[in-house]
Length: 73
Image 1: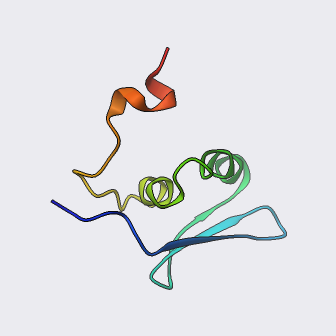
Image 2: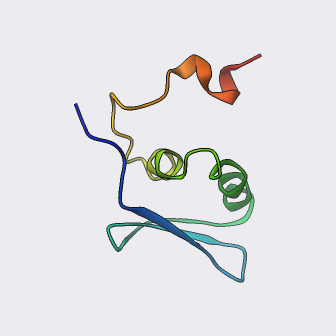
């Protein structure tokens, strides 16, 4: 299937928003609570997290769903 998610970068702006780019093109702009939630999660696996948040999630290289913190419990 697809290769590893790659080419994502993000910039945290002074107004608290987050701009996510993919190969130099803006893929998403997050503001408010969504930006804070993204920043809390991005330290885990930055490329994979940015791929999920932008909807550019390559099926086949994801972590197993049961390993995700949201699904532990």
